[in-house]
Length: 95
Length: 153
Image (cartoon, rainbow over all chains, first blue to last red; front, side, top):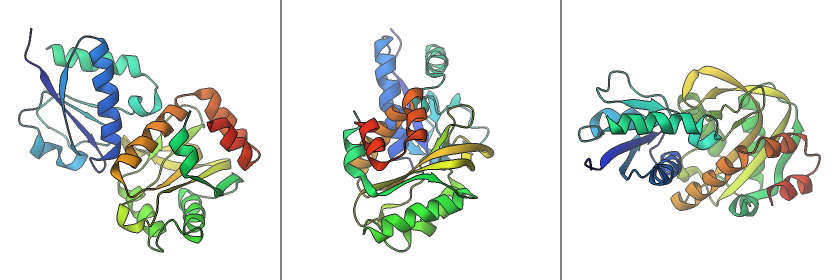
């Protein structure tokens, strides 16, 4: 069993939207048998919070060249393409 | 179904079939209602517009049935409330995940929130609401405040 991965959830202010998305992703991954640690911050502050993070999931535009895998998606708010994005997240965490 | 949303949606701040030329005009109309009803400070409307310019809130649902959820910082809010507008013709909001992309928005939920937990709960309910294409279509066609509240129940 691999070590539990850490996902950093970002949104405009790092408060509400990222919490909604973090809960949705955490629950959906649990159903797939994957447990994650979650963290949150503002999209503009991702670069300074990324050191021990395995993946960034954001609802707002991220700075370029973060040096870590990142996914920008609204699927967990709109429901559109949710399964595909979950597959991407799962793949990124299994690497 | 969307209990917190119904509780915070003020019937006096539900505007249906609104004709507006821009996202600014819709936000101003709804913010005026929230101000008149005592939910927000006078600074609220401009603060929402400023936030929308840097951190847009348009959510793509496909075609021209998109939704926007404008909001701003708690210091402009006196008590938690939500205003809602359906538009006769869509207006453009920038996409939350890509500000360069414009979305044709037909439904706007303007959120005035000053409590983090409440904000999360309401956003979750709005997300739940917009994940139903039938509900979105019905909200766009709602003719009365009662229709809107009934649909969310």
